[in-house]
Length: 310
Image (cartoon, rainbow, N blue to C red; front, side, top):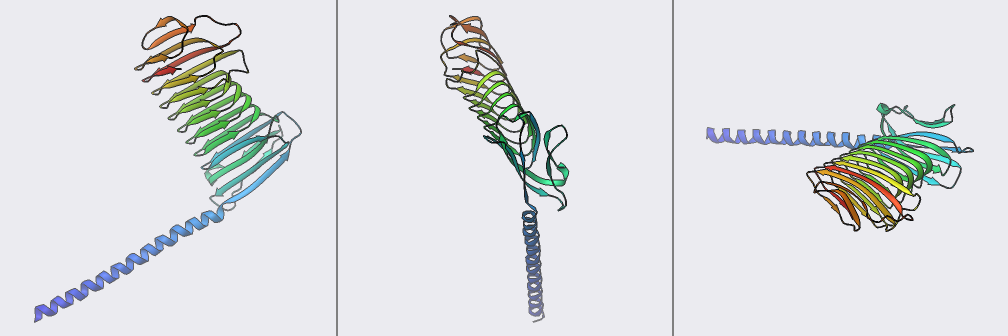
């Protein structure tokens, strides 16, 4: 009889402890829930948009832009008003960004990186009004479209880069941990340094191309786009990734030097004469050059992968 009473008491005690545990669990969950959604609400309240605009009356302007943990978008258009829309999340309400023109005539986007969680920009850039545009971004995707300027210099870390319909003298890209894609663009000089991602060029007319990547592929696809220049000089270098070129233009005379380690070289075009030919090194040129054709000087080098020209 005593044992039965003790057993009942133990069961009641265990039930009470279980109820207390469940109540504590519910309270803890509600606290975490409220903290999480309060933070989201707070972040949404802190997200701010601001627009700046300047009428341009000179074609010799320069500009410095940057982005943080968001998106960087620039689009060229036929107009004379520079318009920048920024969307940002400050860590404190009093932190602001500014976009202004300095005494030397340079347009500058200004903010302190450590005081913001995110800064995204969307910029309408008048075609032909800018000499140099410098862009830097961290943890941001970058999209440049229809820009017409003398030089664009873009440095990015942890973000993809897409350039479409660029028309300018120089395009310089330095990127880490993000792909680089350039489409339908014309430029005298394009210089690309990339790490841990691919480089892709599609239907670009580039006189001097210097492209290097590490730990990523490199692909160039051209469809009758050798039009703007007479002579072309391309230097492509890849470590731990392949180089693939698909060049459809028929009016080209080639001069090729290609070298690879731990890979093969394939020239899938006809009418080459070779001064050097082995599995991993080739020197070749068009057998019967045509003076009316464009001339493409190719220097190709890879490590631990292949080179294909077709």
